Length: 349
Image 1 (tube, rainbow, N blue to C red):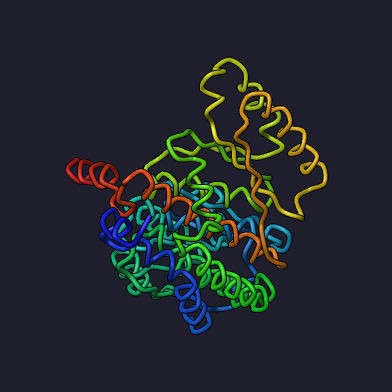
Image 2: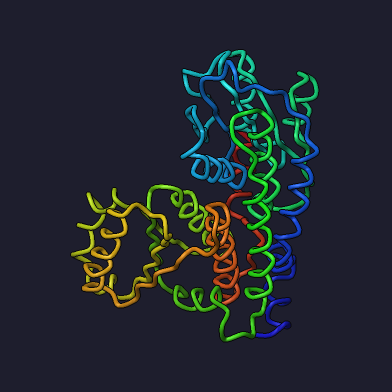
């Protein structure tokens, strides 16, 4: 692989977007620190984040990260409607990177009808216009990127907003550690000529194979989801996934009949030092059971001290794996033509 290969397959520059993710995070932190938020902790019984795709995954990660601290239920809503419990004592985050996601706009309007407290995060579009017209707090983030490549803008201002709103303590030390780790990993993973490039190694493993990714259900379920979404959109490949312990109660049985196909499957197991002790044991036993069906099993451990750093160490690695998967397949990682086709056909109905 050389620079010419990258430029030929990736003319739109997804490589640069992923490489420069630490800079995006740094800018996102500044946006979050500058954003003005009311203090809403009192009188709020639940929180709902409305969004789809790259905007919604920020909510998934936020929910997982704050699970041990947040005192009110947090739900991520990927739909045209909002849950029946949404009302005056609900805080609704409306997250739409483009500002024109039709499902999120519909949910936004319904949240307003239900008299919920609304905070918006968007680069522009109808979401921003509604927020301004209704005098709702609006976090304005830079536009022009594919939403999946704007996770820093979608996540970190919301994390900082949660502290300003009074729901959590400041996370500045964890954020700083995460930024430092991302800068280091950017240098490592961007070097496509290095034999030590972990992201490129993993992409070679899953190349031309069906991939399966497992993780704990606590904290790293959202990371699991992010990997699957990125490999699909960037790598144009399927990676299915599940979480433990639930996977041990159903999917594990499915590893039986299609023996020839299973031998060619690549299994990734995301692991963290603070996974529940019983889940750690389950992962060890599951690995042994799966080894009877495929020899292609790779454990991937999180890096860093704080939970935030450990989560984003795996998020960022997955982004690079998805990128190199595209390059190895000769696929441009930027276009999502079938999604555009779907949106165009919906617009005509």
